Image (cartoon, rainbow, N blue to C red; front, top):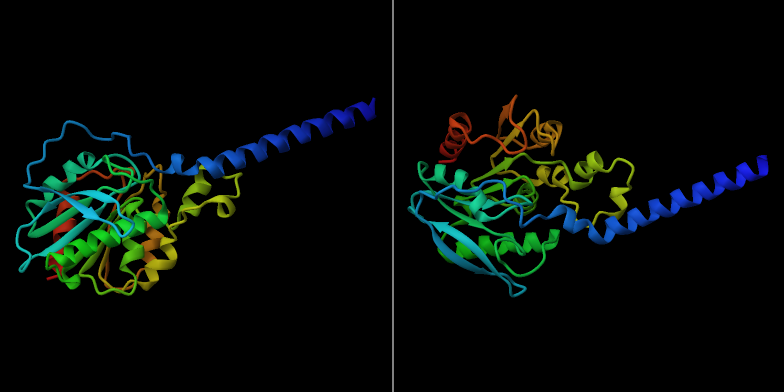
Amino acid sequence: MFEKLRKNLLQLFLIILFLYFFILVFLYFYQRNLLYHPNENNYSGDQISVDIQKVKIQTSDNLELLGWYHEKNLKDYKTLIFFHGNAGSLENRIHKLNHFQDMNINFLIIAWRGFSGNNGKPTEQGLYEDGKSAIHWLVKKGVNEKNLVLYGESLGTGVATHLAQNKNYAGIILETPFTSLVDAAKKFYPYIPVNLILKDKFDNYKKIKNINSPVIVMHGEIDQIVPFSMGKKIYDIANEPKYSYFTKYDDHMMEYDEKLVFALKSFLKSLN
């Protein structure tokens, strides 16, 4: 009887081990489909009210990225480059871009490779290349890097933080930043060794220490995707000058209300 029970337990253990290994293999090869969601639609029906020019930005690996560009005055105003998150299209950011028309800034928002009809597949290194190419495009138009403001939204904070290291940009805006994708993934996959199998890590907490440009961190305390504690940690370890816009009731998709817009305007004014 005990021998049979032992064999049954061993068989059960082997089945569980096989299933766990299968899950690890699946996650390793399918992880980028779980991370990047170009077809997700968070907002729809918004009408853009700020004048934009649709542009194409060439990357060093011969991809063309769609961008929306608004030029108000390159000489007198800062230029903001917007790096969006891991889901949706440029149209999903219209509700944010419309507020920029009331600010004295030029702006460029780009769609990542694999997003908004762009060719290619998103990866950590690929997104870094996309961001560098967008900055290079602006520099070729005559924008001085000292007048550039990098705006990272969620996953885009990983690109903004990476590219801002050891640079003298005018400012850095981080909306709902994470410490690293490893930390964020552990929340959803606590029993998976994500630090071993994760391909795209975006280690913001290591890189924020290398940024000496003014930084503002924006985060809501009830964020269900990126815990507020991560944004707070990024703020705590950031160098001065640094500012925060923390709210009690914002989830991951922060409310672009008068208070948030005022915080952005105040930050941008402080850079002049």
